[in-house]
Length: 431
Image (cartoon, rainbow, N blue to C red; front, side, top):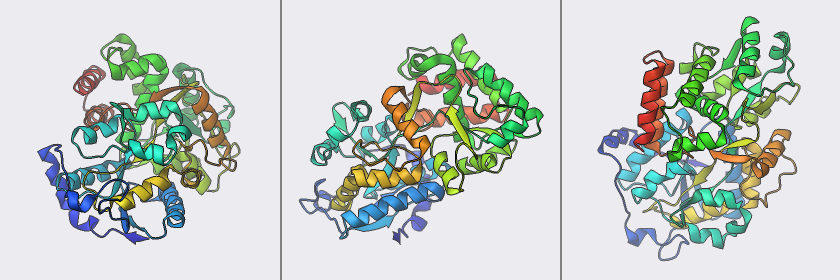
């Protein structure tokens, strides 16, 4: 697996971000068409992701193994950039796109996150590949609907993740006098359990840096407002300045009072590790945490338990990692080969088995997936589906950045609740 050495030479290009989004195009003589015809080069493919460590890298490695079997004549070039749930990668990617130096394909969250790239003319329509690869029938229609923008599709998802999951250490809960098999119908019910863990001397709720706090925020909004009210935050039918949102933000503020004081210096694996090590009782995280528990040799329900965030049972807080074909990709034939593997049953089975998510391709073999993944497959097929805020499905990147900035100010004590609510309303109304 060759590592892309160009990354070390392009980090300085991040400063170009201040110029804003702009459309970019490549030399049509070099690019060719998505199928590799017209001069399309399939000799290699630079795959740009933020899967640089842990279970995420394990998932990428599993996908690459299938790719090498399916396309042995195309060299895989690893363009992974570590840090901040993709924030470092997205910054560097935007710099490269603006300087007409795109990778052959890049990871992006399916949904509204792609809108900026679409508006800037930076990604190709790959709808034809859905027909060519047989994905139109293999992917759930609800997923295809969420991927479609003005009749076109701009990415192929590798997975489906769920963001509204609580992970807990059963020993910590038992020591606090709690039933580890219990679930909670509302935030108020959960507060009682959190108080018990706190009184036992352990961290009640582990959390990490800002994006994990935004992930927590979205699940509180979903719990208190319900699926319809939560979705209304993004289409304008729910008033961000209303009393119901105020109540949800008060619950979020209370939840943050149960968290670890070192949170802003950690990322999600560190918060999950606190559950694994028995330092904390509960953690809210997407189901990529499942792979971290498995990687640590832990087994549910003996070593960890999981359940939907209180008040969200019956709702699936959806996000998906997906891959694109950038305008001006130097090796479009290689990109097409990678996209074929990404969408294939074999690629999706290998990748999701390692990453803790579930396949978008319903033809993937999931017979050896974990018990958690089996429940997620069932839930995705039956629950009400909503789009994740923290992971690019609900809002464009600029909106999420503004929400994240407001959240960081609030959780670090730089603003009060009224200011926070006002800033959230402004962030979303400006999208």
